[in-house]
Image 1 (cartoon, one colour):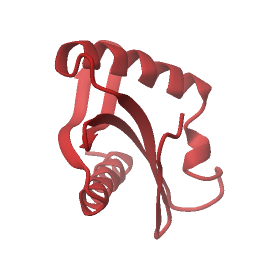
Image 2: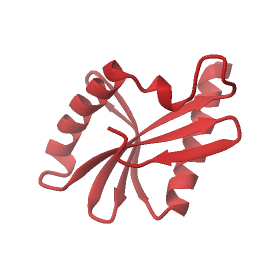
Image 3: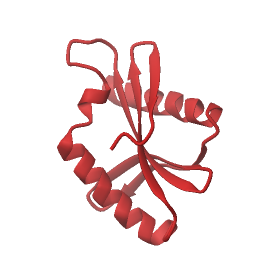
Length: 112
């Protein structure tokens, strides 16, 4: 595993623990679908939440939240639609982002 992959896995594990502490129930991690992967799928009450985790150790390339651009959001929407048809038809859906900027962890609910 590369250093970047290790950082990504560590970031996702941190985000998962953080979300659990916020009352989320994690139901899937690294959900692989044709066309991509969803970092975390959670339940917040009866709402299915698709969570993108972004980590930035420094500000050189911008904030973690700024890394979730239009192309990434469109891909996540398409992946979530496929996932929801199979796993959670009829339930409300939401997209959150957990931004890890250095030591700062921020949950952006209903990010897009």
